Length: 390
Image (cartoon, rainbow, N blue to C red; front, side):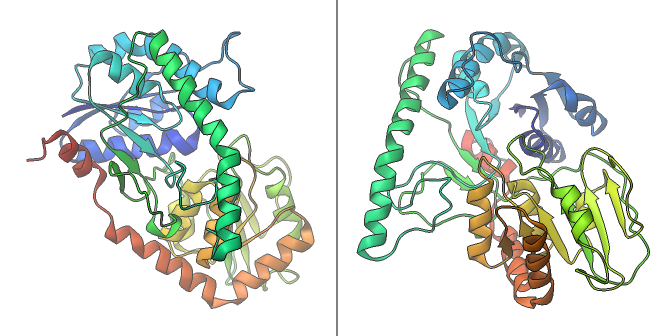
């Protein structure tokens, strides 16, 4: 099967796209990744054919102050720009990231089946949940259900406006106004990070997290025999700022952390200044770090959180914007983490000591990670959606 996987350059979307391409390669398929220039050589080094996705940079006509316009208008422009390139691949299937939606529009222009890749839990509205992004658990009792009804009504206008914008741009590029949608929605998360809903879409299939490590290097830990604390600042533009600096100032072994503790700050860039002897900062395989970690302190991005749960590592989460607040609250309710907002030295110290000192957090993380064993393989789901699985 020839398949294109379309995703933007943000690591939270590009890395799962690369991971999915590698799954297709292992199954004997022929995947092509279309993403930003930054990750093309990284994907090619893994044996994945990769090409630049045109139109990622905003133009003077893009309205980035309107989230719906930012997604749909840019997607329509990019679908037209990339139609020829995608068509030349003679594809059986297009997989389009849920944010970089141009892949689905281009597939519709070409008459090629497509599947949506959600690199996080399902974020579509539900008649049984409070609005996604609120971080709230579903309400119980009369007052709780009334609260959710009111909140859903307040957010429904934005959702309807997004659907209107989607229909408008479809017509603008020569497609029918009514969007038939994808054949499947791959929900690349753990069951523990989903919230049960009475109206789960028939086409949505939970397939487990898709992880890719952009480096072969491993961060060497400083000497010591105490707990290992991994700090992973958010890679998203909406992430909380100052986490690395605050962690290195606060998490001092013998004061906040037990004697002999080590701190490893995992990020795409190296250190900005002096590093204490009990810490290391730089790019290294997070899966290797987490395999021996006692605690992860992170921003709440889905990829990092899911990776920690797969390793059975509890967390302290410092969420920024976007979906980080939603993810953080779900993990707290599941029992694997403490949440901090706003970030202060006192709050970071207290939450770190609480999670390190309470086995229940690690036990909850291990339970969550075990859920990966219950989900189907995403490549099989794609083949079955086309009726082509041998």
